[in-house]
Length: 599
Image 1 (tube, rainbow, N blue to C red):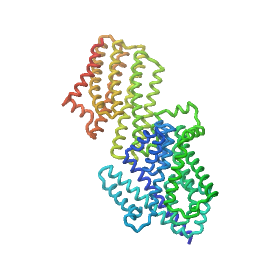
Image 2: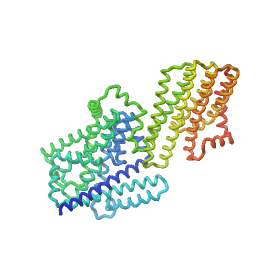
Image 3: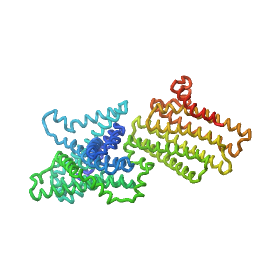
Image 4: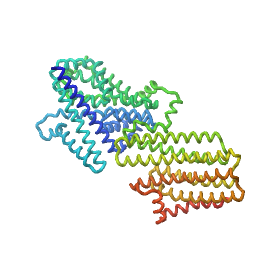
């Protein structure tokens, strides 16, 4: 008889736990999508002051209903060198406070009253209503914001449904002697802490393990003596998620996870000593009384707030402790500063807004590398340097690796749940990083032209070098504008690329015609002619890709993805706006007229 009852109870509890965890996931994901990454970006800005960091860490965690989620984000930010270890400590402390909000919401199940208004506050009354509203918004909503709100409400409803199921499932244990004896053993502080830490580590959520404990209070057999050590242990068990997230990360990311663990262990030891010293000397009158769901929520908050207040003055000591246990030499710590690898942190995939921000930084880096390589390859025509060639190829390899990583990262991100805006941003990033990668390829083509010129023993005349330099300057300005337009999302700069690209076209055509004339007149050798002509074409193609980036940004700003670059040019030439005409003439004066004056 007991075995059948136990089986039903276990299955029901596990089923309720599954709903609880899924509800938390829906709630957190919905809030993240609704925020569009603003929570994480603000977290990045608010961590400069430890008190602001604690406050905002608590607010973010209260919103996403998971201290583990907040701490994992912090590990990612530290790994990406966005915030320093010292800044992360305050956020971690605040996350421990914010996670107690879930327990207080769950404790509302204990409300008992004959008053209709007060009864409406009970989750059993409003959770079904919230779920109904949530599913209607999620399925019938036309806007992304409506669907996100529906997901948030649905997450709340499912979370409480799981809580109801766990509470109902464990109710029969009230009369089971073995269950009573089991929890009497947990009054031993060591066993209680280990049990709380173990369960929380397995399900990777202190809010969920607190919820299970609150559900068990419905049996009336859980006392303060057995519950307090379990609650303290749950705060240690929740550290497993950031510890796992720090595996393979930078030294500082590992240190931030260590700070989280050490903070909770120190806090647990302080409270264990304080509570049990008081109990064994003065005595707590309620020690062996049954604990309620509301009592658990209150103790959880008191513990985390008190520990945070006590340890804030020792934040620097926590940092030194982490540096002592996880030490690194200057070389390995310098390696951690490599932004090209750090910014594409998989921990950000759960936060699309933040992931897009940091993927954008990598795309900008690709553009900057391509721009510097263009300057380097142009200098090879006047002075071919094999060491510089090695550096050029090394940077091109970096661009290629970044392109591969950015593409893979964004594709993985697109497989998740994204808003319409985020989906468009991912598509735009995929296109722009491809444009920058192609610029790097054309720079290598120019380097190979310089190499052939050098190998043949030929050289360009002074006038040809000046022509190449002028064209290169125009194209470099194109790249600079493309990078700035993308970084600042400035459409006026994006609109200024096309007239400059058209000037690059007429400069290239003019230089080709002029060089063919020199070749006919015997003023230029064949060995020098082909590298020169090919180089001109490669410069012009780089400018084309810059114009493609400008067009991409213009389309995104106008929410119009149907106009291609050729159509855009046709529209411009039809109207030939004053803005476009003025820029075109300005660039023509700067570059085309300069070329005409070269003899």
